[in-house]
Length: 446
Image 1 (cartoon, one colour):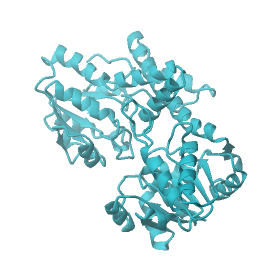
Image 2 (cartoon, rainbow, N blue to C red):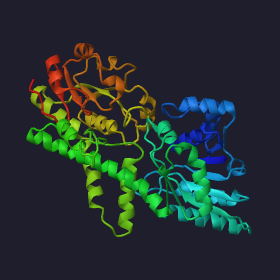
Image 3 (cartoon, rainbow, N blue to C red):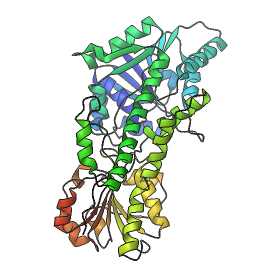
Image 4 (cartoon, rainbow, N blue to C red):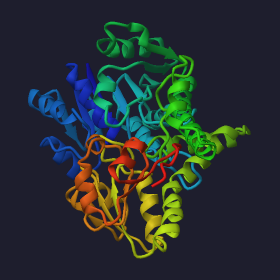
């Protein structure tokens, strides 16, 4: 099949490359000529495990091409996926200007039947707006051209996106056209050979809502566990034991029950706020999600609050100290730093007159571009610790899980760790000689 992907961001690149991997002829379009040139050479603008290998292979086999020309890119394709960004507007709602601009260009360029698919995360009603804009552009050309519009939201976890796309737990297709439904189902059949029931056909508004509802539910679980963690600290309970206890209930499950320093990234913060704004416009109050957002905002400030309490009591305050920080991306296996808890933590430390030295295995460059903060970046996780008065662990990269604790003890001025991801056992850390603070677990007296 011939497929066009408009937008070469995170979603567009993974989608286009994985479709090509299944033998389709895929053309990816972007307005950034420099980016297109780099992709054509096999240079990725993002870090995503497994993507580089697929990109190289499909470029070499000629199944994947890149261009800045929309008319050229869609001319011979039957499927046109819109995968451009939908950034958060000033009021928290999704900004659809890029999606609607692409719809206008499609209407001006198509010559024959196309299935236009919204892959970007968009509010309910967006596909209908896309349909209207395309039809108006065709009418203005004095032509009669058949086309269909469908919604096909993505459910990709950063760091596991390639695996998620190639082995999906579900594929949601929203369309009011039997023809489009059949063609899209045929396109996705190779991804669900062992279980075709994973392809879910539904109406367009339901497909658009499914994406938001899924992310909102996951965000809710995270904020819920962070509140339970706070109550555990106040009552002497251990949130790890509570997590295991409730996760054993198959109605709840074990995933997304880890407390931490709050969620970030390009999806949860934006999608929760967009859903709240959509509800507000419709006269519906989403009280639970409003609380989810507020809990998450406060959670990003939790570690610095803990640090203030400790350093005020034992070290004459935070001011003048040097703090080492491990992890800048919002989660491991990605260089995405959007809405990263690390940014909030660093900003709060800088306001407290603290010098910050940070290390991240892949996200340093992205963090520097996103945030203009006067901190020192270290090329090595242990060098980052030299002379620091404490360590803050923010992102649970795998090689932070079993570090060389003797080297950490030798490097730090004071052997204190504030663990924002509960990576280590409190009793073991105490026995090693650390002053150790985590989230929702009893503090072991030094």
